[in-house]
Length: 377
Image (cartoon, rainbow, N blue to C red; front, side, top):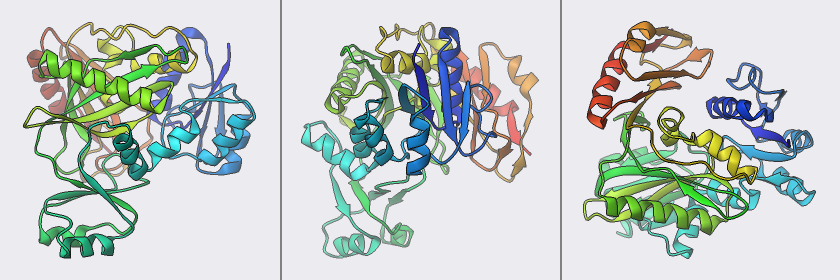
């Protein structure tokens, strides 16, 4: 079996390693040090910087196939490795587009895929000038073109009072959309062109951290909207010609229109529930996609709700978990701790998936689990 190299050894890398074990796949991981969650679960761990050309290039010599668990990696090294015959998913030239939210939006527009209106700006002063010239109307959303992650690099500017919050750097400025719901669909494709989509999930965000707090599957949408969302996700992954997973985040507007928010070419927070609630997990599906194996069934075994376990406000330091036994006593609760050694406010430390006969029952039990399990120090 071919050796798979993963750039990044965080929680997504850990869960990819766990999904690889039943097929006895050989996994190599590159990340900063052996405290990372995936370090003790892979066959070969290499300490290094996935943003450094030499570290990525040298790591690439250890594997037959390379993939990622985070977008922010050195694509120049990946392009060199690809020219030398390495099989890389996502393809580095497509990854470079997705890394830059401005290029990503332009790609969607070029392929006539629905997204909110946007403009590109080089710095905060250019945005202020556009406001003065009435080329931008309040409210709007500013996103830094590169480097944003887990809610970082995003500001909502609702009025002139918020202008001081503008971030300085190349940015995408989007119209603020009247949203009825945020949903996500994860698609997967293999080299044979087979595509499979997981059922759409509904997302609720933490009011201050801008992270997904609750995720429910199936989403409370009509069959028509579900089919349209899956069709859009299929069109997006085809437009990028990607193999492996592509998470497609969508806005459902109050006019029942679907708009593409962002995409991520890797396992995604919106697919963690699949480990417990679907026939095939997103992590196993990604491995199938990049190895050109038949894709697994994406059918649900049961409705589910997922909660992100975030570091409690006011706690920083060596992690402690309070209330695990109480949470495990609740029906349908599955706890997934990522193995991070230190916590800080709003850091993702794990997740809970709650399965049940209905979304309502799973949500009730998820709320109970959330109330008893705390991440402290």
